Image 1 (tube, rainbow, N blue to C red):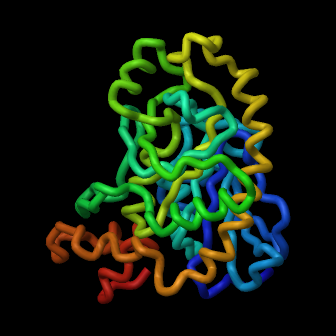
Image 2 (tube, rainbow, N blue to C red; image 1 turned 180 degrees about the vertical axis):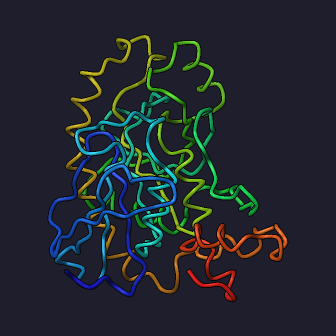
Length: 299
């Protein structure tokens, strides 16, 4: 078994179409038990040959073979496990529909805002006697987005450096009326998976950014047919290689980042419950996330 890096690891959560990360060395599969059940799939840990000493952990969000719909993804288990394994950065690779003419299928959007339209998903670690309110005004990491922007340009991608992502429940696509509504809000893309994932990453003090890969124009665009699964899959397959190239180009910059990831202290002023009222069992359950704020207890 390879030894994990002492640097914060880079986590990659692969969305629709991206079920593995090629080119890793020293690969091992990790089955992590969590208080929230199993992760979507085994987590694969390895290192890119061009960045020795920098761990990269890959997790297929929908499971191998795409067996989990967006509402079935165990978001809390996934983020808890990545945190336990030392992840300080998460690159979320996500298939999205475009809500703007200028974002064509095959192009990349580096999301900087979200609108949450989900309704059936646990969205926090902080309940059952331990409450925290993290800041989420700027839900993605500026530093990581900048590195992904530079990496995208370096591999020839057409990249949009910002935009709002509407996260819907799914698994059905939008109605035409909904698609026009989201456009009226100024949103740029629509997807089904980045919330609560981004919220949980912030609670876990992980710097998170979305590599949104446009697959279609959603159903608002009357010059195009309504979205079909076949159309989405065809563009997905073309996007997979591009996403892998962007990640490989970004990891050296992440490894060279000076200091800790920017959101490594997101909980410092967020834990609101009186420490004397928090049960040791609850702290131990969330130990990878909150342990350092309870130095008198042990995992």
